[in-house]
Length: 147
Image (cartoon, rainbow, N blue to C red; front, top):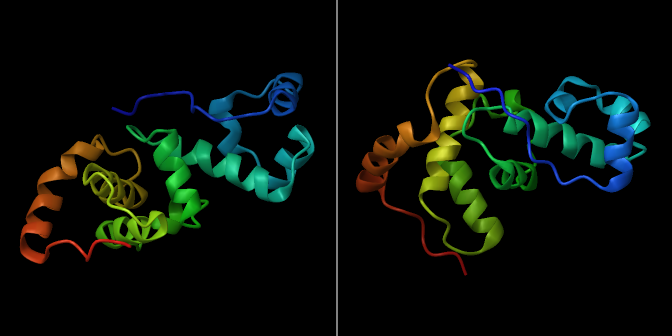
């Protein structure tokens, strides 16, 4: 069963006012086109794209704002862009980006969101991928520590 949750987006006062004025819920931002968001919220195209992406990623069960930001930092703006990706490789790219070790549970989230992109509406949660990650890392290990 999919949870209906309102995304936690970091919005400016002006952006919130634009949503209120147009009677748009935070949870519906990802349903609006980037060009319409630009007009409604009076933001740049990039900002509208980021807000739309954060909303879409956070509409996935058990995905929160921090992970949504990580996906955006890696250059993803739509769930469908993750369909053919490898969760382990995405995790490694994030460690490269931050140049530090990241909690292995984040890899579980990557594995989950790739699965969810291919299986929308699934009842699985990110922690359902912990065993898969552990088995994979037991066999293949982790990449060298980022510098």
